[in-house]
View: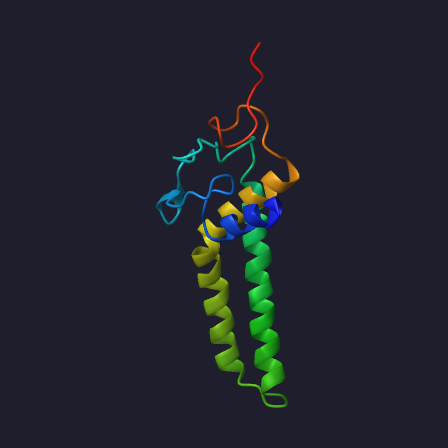
Length: 133
């Protein structure tokens, strides 16, 4: 498996993209500052978490679009409008909350794929280390 694929799959499973450590959240909406195993700081740069909001928005709007399209196309020409609205409101209200921690680790994985680890960002044995003279 390619390193980028491994990083992305770990992120999709709510695990640290670098080492695969799970249990990165104290509660559903409260993520640790660093990985307990490799010591990766999850907020790598200031403003890092704006990307996870984008991921969550894309997934939520995509799911909402699918619900609306399937609801209308499956029952055309007389779609059950009330049922479709109830399903759409449920998806729009619940999915962003349910997907929240996944969006954080997926964004972290994507960030690591775009900006690889720099020396010293993680404990020895987990990535590049500063050269010692």
